[in-house]
Image 1 (cartoon, rainbow, N blue to C red):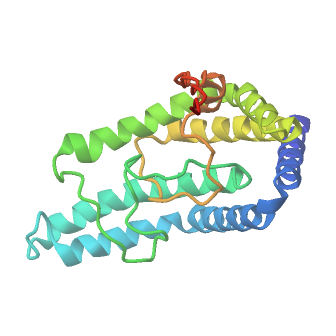
Image 2: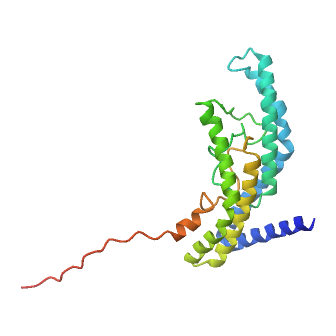
Image 3: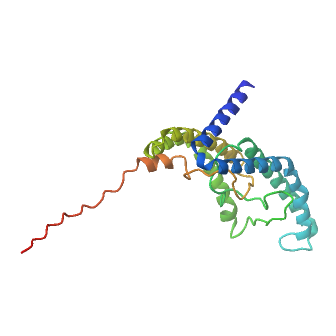
Length: 241
């Protein structure tokens, strides 16, 4: 119990620190965190709606383009409903627990997308065989797992990366706060990506986006030496005859 309270206090301090350090984006942060929290709550408690919703879709649409094949359509819809119920509920829990955290800029191409933002919406069915199973299914699942591993194993690199970046920008204190915030954000996001890489997830993200795509990018960019500038030959003074 004490450990949970400690983690919550640390998270709260991190959030308040970031809001204070990034005063210009306080409103944006609060708006993003609120939207993420709201969707997390809704998806956590209404994920089960996917089961009847997908079953009804299966009955209506039939199976493999055959609208008259209602029996197979219902079975396929039922299986998809179970798959999406678990995925939506787990993604909701992740956003509910990590509403304060930063997010990747996008989920485009990462993980199998849910049909719609909320379970009761019609949305668009995602074809796991278009253009083929490897590109439409295996690749996004693999990319989600790799993103989770990268963030979990190397999230700590955000701390020195953001500190060095902050020093270069004349704001080392903001760099420390942002580095710790990004580190904790990548860890919690990475863990959920790893544990749910086979499951569908929302097509978009709600939290404020990281400055860089990967946790090591900030440190690498900060330590990168500037390209040498070509020497400009000195101009000879004009001789006036």
